[in-house]
Image (cartoon, rainbow, N blue to C red; front, side, top):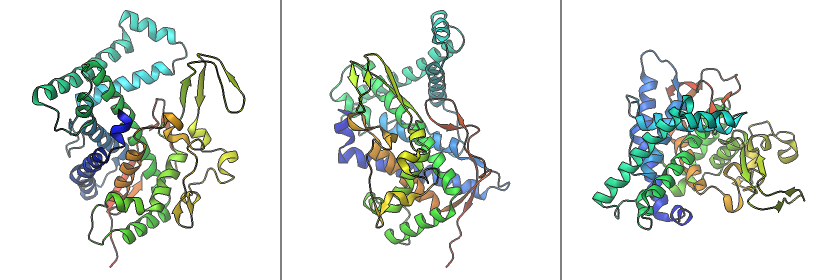
Length: 366
């Protein structure tokens, strides 16, 4: 059902409209305000992008606007609870001794108590949204929840589906945008080429690109893919064999075995990408100026095969919308560009300490 819905033109247009509205009405005004602030102090772009992506994914999934990116940068109980639940779940997954958190869960103490409370807050809000939609009618709404409600009557199942979409689309997008702008800040020539390409495709007085225009920007698409190659939002992932199986290289995998692959490491292997694998070089994705796609199994940022990410295309378009809006209007200067990114432990690659950046309105020479 999700695959069919996310492939439809109507949901694509709906998502495109949501992102453009959030960029126009919140992201750009916030960055403009930061650029004009008297003290001129840095702004945490990672926090900005987390708020931005949370607003978008909630509107897309629930039809609910938490307003996290309002100029006052409000604290959202829903977002805080979601963050805490995600963080503690990640700590579970990486625990050296899983027995410890299982005991805490049994006794309802410490981190497991906080996790249960956070999940309850998220669940209650989701249940409230579902109840209100049933009362007011959902047939005319375009969000993902309303579309699922047309064919599913189990409210708990509905809630879990939508929360899964928020989990999949919130921090991954924030992570991708954060490292993308860190790379751009360290490669001004790439920024110049993105601007030149957008000027060739868009009208001089045009603020936002259309979906068709974005598809024409091959270099921008290459830049986004190169960024994701070096800094995938999910640095490693695991699958469990449901039955005995054999990998393509002949390796036997017994039922129940955990198999882990590491996109972050794969993006830095000479055997896959050549001797310049550590370089940020968008041109590797181009052939005669046109974007040249590669096998998703070579760069499994969005997974591949039947498990490919359902939101892949929408995620790429969202990144490009934000990239164009910001680079065409602002110059972004990272506070410590020479420092390599350091990541907090977790399911999604988030920068430790955020990404402090100075925002300046771009001066265009006449």
